[in-house]
Length: 433
Image (cartoon, rainbow, N blue to C red; front, side, top):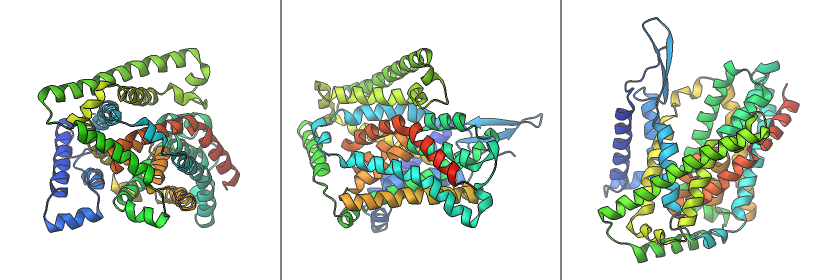
């Protein structure tokens, strides 16, 4: 089936994305009473995420599509916008957002961030088997299957993605040998459910004060970190010159280049010298991921630069430029979401929704018990479900100074991802009909 969108050129699609972001920021800063009321309910970040999703759903743009050539053969095509945003702009934004970080204040956030992250992991581990049990009572055929077609094997790849990331997901596909022809259905569930949950979290960010009040959360450490960074920024704020802007971009993209260079070296070295890393079915295979090392290196360098005189470039708008890159990344992630596909495989989507609901309920319960702020709940969840690509987005939505917290937790996700997913898979094997 030919699924060619109206716009197939990335240059034009990027123009549409930038027009969308311009519209969102223009209206969100408008004094018009309609827009003022609108953005009190719908955060600007959610609009930047959902509008590209609507364009994809309407067939205007697409992350990937198929065309029929003259010989009548289907040819696959793929947009490179998300790749460029995640491999170029994401590490650049992490550098610029951690340039003025107060590491001592981050550590003062205490153990609640890690507790909520681990709670999110447990929510995914127990959510899978519980979802299978519940759905099997109503639609047993949805969670059945035998051999390579067994649904629990495919759901194991979801667990890998929702605890760690793409590398962990690939590892689970190798370990449990799910039918590759049906794997696309699991990827669809991953995209639909994970993106819907991220949209809910973004809505929650707009109501975080009310949520924190209901949770009876102590947000003093987070507010202290925000004040420290804002206070420093106000002290060094200046009207940026062309030289300032060029140097800021030079810092960002020099680190991007170095992080890619270092990621390639480390990944190749580990794969060549350690069989456990090169073996895709190994629990340690995620350490062979270039993306993992790229994020880790760029974050480490950004934090290191915060101890140098480069920190003063925060006054010239370093974190604001980083935020621009984050919003472009958000829009390209939204572009991957086709709302029309929600009903394509309702049984599997239902499993994913029940699974994510269990994850959410456990997070809310623990947050209520330990009085953890909504920030820790949202970032702890995304560090699991979204990984390094979206955890800093959610964290930065609270404040640019908090982006690094999302990255650090996402790194934990990569480390425990395959182990957690294997435990989930074995539990799902036990309860599957």
